[in-house]
Amino acid sequence: MNYRGSPLSVDAAVPAKNQQLPRSGRVPRPGSRVADTEVTCAGERVRLHALLARPGVHILLQAGAADPGLAPQGGGPTDARIHLHRLTDRPGTGVLIVRPDGYVGFRAATADPDPILEWLGLVGLHPGRG
Image 1 (cartoon, helix red, strand yellow):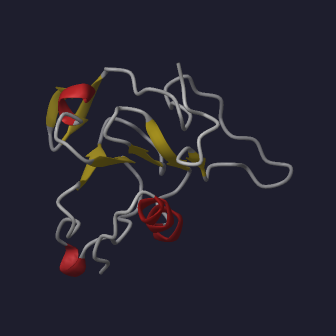
Image 2: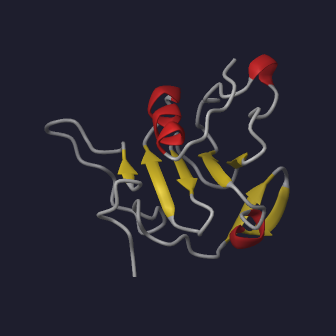
């Protein structure tokens, strides 16, 4: 089962003309369920589903992703339903946003704040922005 055709499944990683996305089985597509794999976050090895267990939307940044600037003064997002995690064992600059049901809602090759904020607004979340 997947929700790839849902309006809440947004792929901002669509390549520009004459470019191809790297083919990797490790990055799920929007509308696909996130696999329960081991990841490193905040210096600890954890199961991804355990990391996603808190209610809300989870923003997963790859190791080299820029801070999307969703919080004032460099703190966490101001909406308690938004959880930001940097996966330091996942190389790259991309971002995934996982919905509360464990399905990917948003994917992008970079952590540009504008499409992230647009998707969060689509689901009714409006974090503070620094």
